[in-house]
Image (cartoon, rainbow, N blue to C red; front, side):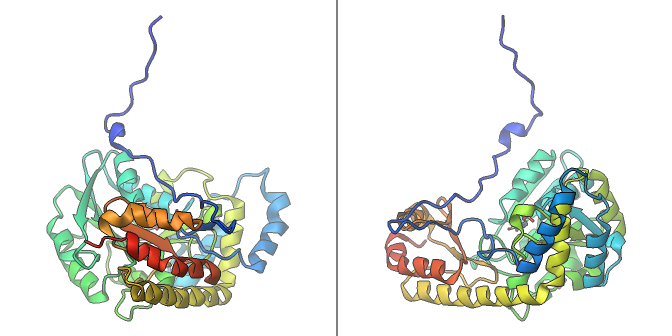
Amino acid sequence: MSEVTQTFRPGLERVAAYRAGKPAPVGPDGRSIKLSSNENPYPPLPAVVARLAEVLPHSISRYPSIAAEELTGALAARFDVAADNIALGAGSVEVAAQLIHALTAPGDEVMFAWRSFEAYPILVRVAGAVPVEVPLDAEHRHDLPAMAAAITDRTRLVFVCNPNNPTGTVVTAAELEAFMALVPRDVLVVVDEAYVHFDRAAESPSGIDFFRRFPNIAVLHTFSKAYGLAGLRVGYAIAPTDVAEALRKVAIPFAVSRLAQEAAVASLAAEAELDARVEDMVAERARLTAALLAAGVPAVPSEANFVWLPVGDGAAGVAAALEERGISARAFAGEGVRVSIGDPTENDAVIGAAAAIAAAATPR
Ligand SMILES: *Cc1c(COP(=O)(O)O)cnc(C)c1O
């Protein structure tokens, strides 16, 4: 009997599996420090845990509300937009996929900077669209003039990841404004603000302001990073009503669980407490960056909850030096290493490794 093999969709062979941040190894002192996925180092707020405990017994056997009225209403109030402008997903990565599925036909182009969020090229190829990667500039920032010049009549979507993952750099409001003047109105610009809460740069654009001013802007937000709900999977787009409606059409039904919806609502109600934690992480980011620079490690000033070390071919060695100490970070071979901001003792461990990191680094 001949072996049966299936025929897969053309192009799927070029889709790389998503590489998640590694689980942390165990260090010599028995500690494991996971700084590879930009998660919040703190547990959920007590109010969020309490709400989850309350609804848990009633939320598992029933499907969640697809419309997620309460969360949608809370977000609309929070950002002063219409409920019709909001589309939810199981993490903003699902919403990014919805955008690509809703706006591209096979062969259409989706542009983003590179290196940026590694889900982008995967999502684009899975949808049958064509990823167009425009290199970051010498300062690890989006090269918006080059991106504008790379727009073709096949371009349907442009992702602007601000702050950028993994480099932590931001565009300025003036740069985004100049870019928008060059983008045709039938190309949707998606400002991915997964890390916006950590951004302290005075010149940074507010995605929501741009959404209000331009008809072809959508903003992506997530509860995974500043809000500490990565494991519950909930994110959203704020988008023009026709776009948001299209996103709801292509969304996977029931993808956002009741628990996720409840935790998101409770988190929005506790934003002041969350902000205090974010403020701590921002201070820790400054402390870690300064210590690494003082030790001679190249570290890019970051507006996110991670720091990019552009160590080039030193990436594998730097990751190994961290692993020896029980710390997992995210290494991109030949490019650099991204280290998430942890709690103060976790950051101390990274600072303790600074000399070893410097020794392993071979800046390009
Ligand atoms: C983490 C991240 C997201 C969202 O993650 P979800 O957990 O799916 O909400 C989106 N964009 C960028 C750039 C990220 O780093």
